Length: 445
Ligand SMILES: [Zn+2]
Image (tube, rainbow, N blue to C red; front, side, top):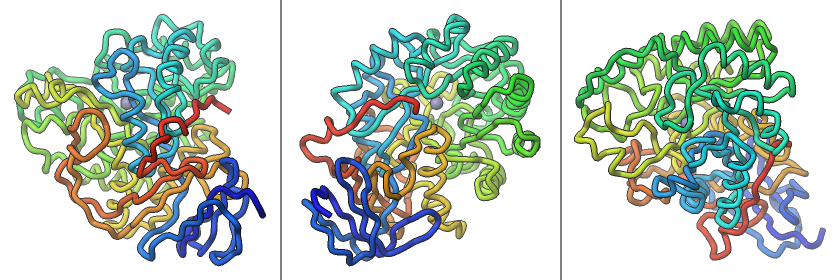
């Protein structure tokens, strides 16, 4: 076979659920051959991975807040995609907030695409937003290629992205079901959130966002999905108390998927220092028993996938509030460490790496309808990661590539590290000079 751009050979290549010695050949961005590791393939570049490296499909991160345009000092397409690439991600889907304007109209989507196009070093797609003023107009945004619609059931944290009431949730679900779209929900019920006087005590902050806020909201989302037939997705599940309702709804055939995030799988309330607001996120990180229940739910398939919910802000907003949990921005910067954090936690629990990898590759690709991503097979995009599962390293926020060097993972030791990332057969980490131009803006298939 001629005109092959790249061959990557690895003793352990993840093919489906199995590790195989293989040579993966990419031509014009697409995997054209998966052959034996010693296969004779004439390629412009021929790479053999080190003995301690495995070859994985590129990570698909379906939950990233890039914040550009409008809050580019918080993040931006260049920094977010370079950081993600350094962690093994090759595809990310950008959330409709906290950019200004939010992605709630076709015009705003076009603005975002214009801002992103010259900067992205990986494939980037966009979620739309369902806010009160966009109800009745969602079809236009759907037709413009967004992957689905995000809504909040409690205040989002930014004024330009108001939440939906229970009635409006049903309205959105009905509207979206009519064109068989996807509704993704930040599920915290405002009526179950409790007053929080502020201060540095972490337990006070968690107590203000109890399990009931998630379980009540998730019950409402499930009911809306059941009654309208709308396909729904629960974003960033923190509370394991919602798992029984999720299991029951799935058993009943409700069209429901669920994600959790690396921070909920890594941290626990008892080890978060008071005043350490780099750990602030909503819903909050809960106790260790809750965390272990989330792991069990991933293993048994109740939780479908893991996404980073990378939601950065400036260092001033994140850690400049004298440790006051009420005033600090809620959002964790984890886009670069997701794969390592999940692999690390899996290894600590004797969960096979092949399973953990699926949670950040094949599962999110299927969820987003990215039929040519998330697995190493002929015809798929040549998105590949050289990953060293046994390498131990300590995260230093200052060394991460996202814009503001703050992260809850700072100082934490992880096991497993991305060494090299290819997007459609082109190396994007470590970045080469032309890396910014290798990404595409993608639309819902
Ligand atoms: Zn988010």
